[in-house]
Image (cartoon, rainbow, N blue to C red):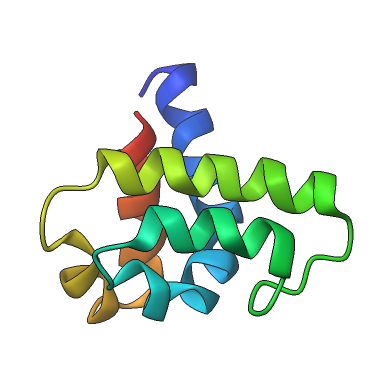
Length: 92
């Protein structure tokens, strides 16, 4: 495993809670627009600092754009360990 691959897997695991929190949004077609709105509204993710929220949501949008059609439907039914791995794969 390369260092780049390891970093991707680690960052995916670190964002697992945020992805699980926002999973209902990720299942929708207009997910990117809703993630941008979440940056300002903070309805679901619950991160107080807007700059931190922006950074995390930017990484999440990058991963959602890399996901294939139907990825989030399959992700929803995975166990936590599988979800961590799949989030890392999205960014590698």
